[in-house]
Image 1 (tube, rainbow, N blue to C red):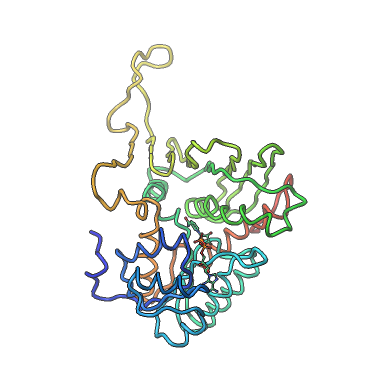
Image 2: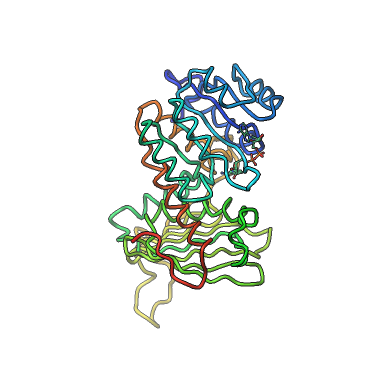
Length: 359
Ligand SMILES: NC(=O)c1ccc[n+]([C@@H]2O[C@H](COP(=O)([O-])OP(=O)(O)OC[C@H]3O[C@@H](n4cnc5c(N)ncnc54)[C@H](O)[C@@H]3O)[C@@H](O)[C@H]2O)c1
């Protein structure tokens, strides 16, 4: 049963850096369901910070995060900012400032534009004993959570292969050192990258080919577990099409999620009886029949709200629980940020050759 904000006995004292579009739509509203006592908000545009403070019930508004961190007594700070003048995410430096002030940090994706910046955050996290959670929302989608549960069960066998499809282009090889041209790729690779990591673990190596028409690509992955995968960055598809498809193959079974919501689990089983050429009925036994889930959109249930379907409220609630229990996140922490950013760098650095991500 989910707890509403006013029902929690203990809440984290929180600050917020960034009063932009995404946070207004998707992050501040999650505090209705999370143990968050929003003390202060901050934005370079002070009038925005003041408007958000009024809208979301914070006591104070600031223009400088340094001033906010100095004046407020906080447990954690949420950071949802944009890119700097060099098209780099602002999260690494802001998260470091937050950790150095004694607070835990929750940052949106993409956590950084380079592996070296992630390593700097890891070093500060180890030194300050403060942690950083990253908004890899896909890891909290109900459909992908269920996939994780299915593929982790003994019945499924070892997850042997994964297919992830996501519409994203990659700039031509000569343009990949240009952070501005890479911004769209960096902004979105975290989505399929976090699905791959969450479901299959660390990637050992990647090879991809890209096409010149829409700049889509097909990647072949080898995971440290020995499993294989395909990352199909399906640029060029219609704007009327669902964005994603994910499939994991086990041993005699597979699970498919279409459009992040329709989950089909094809359990180990078969159709009809009688052998090839002698089976008149395609329906198999009930106890091995496929399992199919999709949402209904009739009821005023939390599960019908975008902030739950798209993982936002669950990821914020999880972070708050980590802060309240003073335990670093085992999901979507800096270790995962490191792996997702390694994948980004692998795509940035080459195509048409095998790139070792982990040895
Ligand atoms: N997970 C998702 O589904 C999802 C969706 C959309 C955006 N995002 C991510 O959210 C982030 C924000 O996107 P957006 O579209 O809301 O951007 P935005 O430009 O609308 O908002 C960013 C805000 O941060 C403020 N800001 C920047 N630097 C600051 C600083 N040092 N101190 C205080 N305020 C500062 C800006 O003034 C601006 O108001 C991006 O990283 C984006 O990739 C994630």
